Length: 325
Image (cartoon, rainbow, N blue to C red; front, side):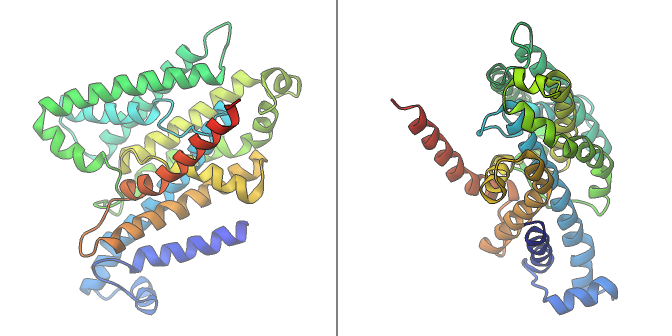
């Protein structure tokens, strides 16, 4: 399965680099990559498509792992990075920063997104993890839904009364990989690496936690510590990804379910493959958006929503059938 994902990722990268309003063949791509000649095609490749592809790799990997951690953490098959208010917190902080400070450079946006994601995650953890039912999944989910609704309302109010912020926010809010500078991916790379290093080793303990808090504690999982580590990883991954690409939904929902069908329910395998699967899915969504709307394009967030909505509906219907008497 690892080899298959690596092969499909390589193909997705070639497609992402070659497909667009100005198509480039595979042979021409190789020539421009190793011997750029200053032509228009070389500028398109190096200044537009290569940064976009690298950003898609990083953002897709981050959201794929974050969604997987969130489903394992809450034991909820409908969980994704937007469920616990983390995307909403990052988006609100970015919009508030634009409105109050007026700075729209990458470091400021990244700092605001991380601060908002961390505060939202901390508030959800406090609200949903208070004694006597510390960290119970349902409490976390309800707290996250309530916080998301509140933060989205606040974001809407700011954009309603600040036209300059609205003009900047309306393109970023749909979730997009376009318009990034060559250094955009490097800006978030350190944070994503820390998030990956924190999240990937948690598979064994998440397997124990899946049996319940009491059994997990008996197996040495330490549920409180495990949830805290997972929360930190999710905040870093979602905050960094949202800062540069906007709140891309549904990708974190689809990836864990697809991997569960392919490799089973072992969180060690699912976590290990989630970054590759997320990168594959986001690159394919971005490339598909460029292909179906030529000479324009659909943003990656819109394509992910179109692909993810049927999956969400199928999961809801299946859950309803399970609880039906």
